[in-house]
Length: 396
Image 1 (tube, rainbow, N blue to C red):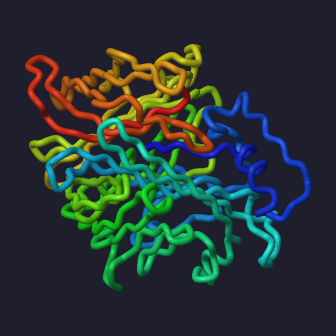
Image 2: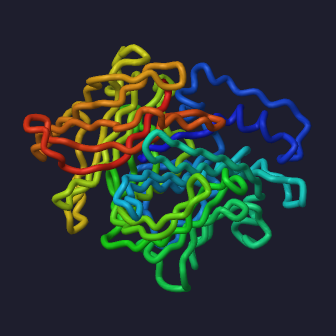
């Protein structure tokens, strides 16, 4: 969805009152609001709903009247020596208050908060950085050059300070084609980051029903589409050394105001590039939500969904009862046991595969921590290598 990880509204407010310019105490009950507050009621905001048209290139831009949103890239690359390398870059947006309650724009008033994550993973190395920013919704829409962070559709530009994903020239970017990604952190020998070019070799993919991705039987969900056909080339700096890289990337776009059922405790999300040209997105929300009257335990199996993508870009929605995800092994990571080997079965498309993280230490030590890392895919019976991808896990 990457279904994607998100910020608890209460934690975000506590950590950014000085940015927001507000002295009032604000409290959020997070104990009954799903993982990271994403099941929290969102009165006054716009909501993702079925039969809601997705428009390009307009919907590449920010949606400040929705509570949460992200632009999320993962990439499976190789360096100049043929060694695997994983990469993540994400820009998150959160609206602090509903549209009708927003203050007039001033230099100290901000109703939108932003967070960006970047990571480079190779072997046992896993470098992570995080940044925060603020903006007023009107500034993002009418005067983007004055905002510390934002996203505009044409020419496409997503940024937080000097971390940015942008169109390389003023061309039609309906398919997120020909973009440049730049992000660096640290200094001297500790500096790491990347400058990459991203070229789309296939269409955008709608998930769910024409872009509405349901996350629970009660109807919560998001608007969700992806660009899973990126070919990537560029330079990565790690340990003070720069090397050329190339490989495949996957970008998720998602926006919502109440993403989850309040009983859902976290998720497991997979994006897979198969060597035969097919691609696969699958996720499960752990906890209640598989049916409207279920009584599952908080950590029990919950709502599942996915998309099977042909090499030509034809997308097929996968039903909840067509997907079985079984954890096969766990690893001790950051003081907890995290599933790092899975079996995924999808009978409708003859999929029975093992998905494994070659390296377990992919814990994102960010404000809202989660696991995010590269995986390899093998045939369940023969062990034949079938592809690669990324796995995200929250709530562990």
